[in-house]
Image (cartoon, rainbow over all chains, first blue to last red; front, side):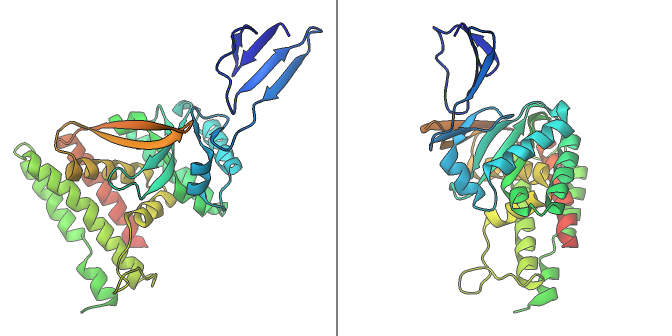
Length: 151
Length: 151
């Protein structure tokens, strides 16, 4: 092993410290071939490719329930990024009711998108989800455009 | 006690919202913070009451408690998320939380939850209650009301 990449960033083999569940590592083998490794998720944290941030896997599963899997969430993130690339890369977060913690849902927080774009995109994507029969996913994932929220 | 459509008509906030909107337009430069806080809070709760009423008497989906007329904020917010009103309900809910539960203005809504690597994480959202947030809340509430009336 001579060169390693962790989440697309070049690291020397002696200085790899940020590997965690969800990290993707590419190792250049002596003969020049690349070996790709995915660090599998543990029971505690999960990284969903395409989104920033590791979240508590159990908590996400608890919020999403049986009808929605992490794979469907992953597909949603990929669809949003392909359809609306200008929104940027989302951060995945858990919304907890600030008053009594009773309400929880998953937030996909995009750095860009105006107030008008936010309203339009949310309706478009949720309509598509409903038409695909994914009402549960539509009701448990909130799309947030930070730029629009701060306008 | 009235039931069915009569009860829905009683709790329909259309007239209330029209009057609030007119009042704000005429007095926007004179409104003190108490007015801004109380108007934002009442917009949210009027929508919540109307939604619950339609749920019980139009959709015949009974709530809980003695009269089967109790519904949670969570159910209300999830139905709006499912239908793509992410921008409207998230904004209105954050403003309502600041208006009803926080004293400073601007303030920082703080949510503590375990979502990153088993550690307790604090999520902070800055919220200001001013003329702009009042106008945004009225716009969002009007859009949500139009949607609820169609349900």
